[in-house]
Amino acid sequence: MKRPLTKIKIKRICLGERVTQPDLKNIKESVREEFSEKEVFFFETSESIMNELRQIFGEAMSIYVSDEEAKKYGFEGAVVPPSIIPTLVSSKLGELFVKYAPRFFKLGIKGMIHAGSHAHFLKPLIVGRKYKIEVSLKDITEKIGRKGTYLLTFLDISVYDENDELVYRDEYNFFLKVK
Image 1 (cartoon, helix red, strand yellow):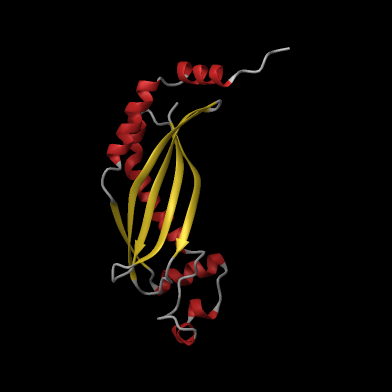
Image 2 (cartoon, rainbow, N blue to C red):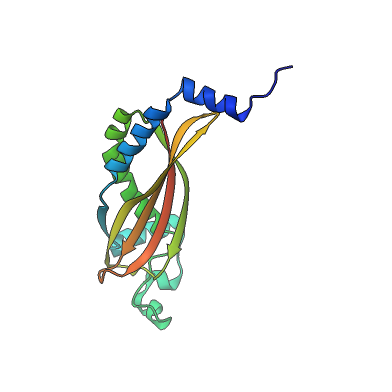
């Protein structure tokens, strides 16, 4: 019967076969440099886009469709359904990952895996308005395990309305597979 690997042996195997500590440190610092400045994106919640997304998501509440109905409940206009907001934000993150992918692969990163998200809805988004998304790196942590070496990366995503008021915040995290 084989003896189970201890944590120390697993760590040595992962470090020895996959990536050395100095390499991991260099990759981590390079990723930190790539994300050193905030990335800024803009999007508009036009009525035509919202109509398409409401149909896809099955969102038919009156406050999502009609300005008049939304105003009856104290909103400034038709509200963007909360279920749609992460989709709008994710599409901009997709653009960011496409931008960084060639650089990441040159560093030795083999892929990305979404690990989680913590959304905070602070104020309703209103249909027909423009919003700004700011993405910044919050932290990078090393994760070494049986399945490989990863950098657990935390992004801070903030969405601002036309008055520069924070309306949505997301703490988005993902694994960068190193080797």
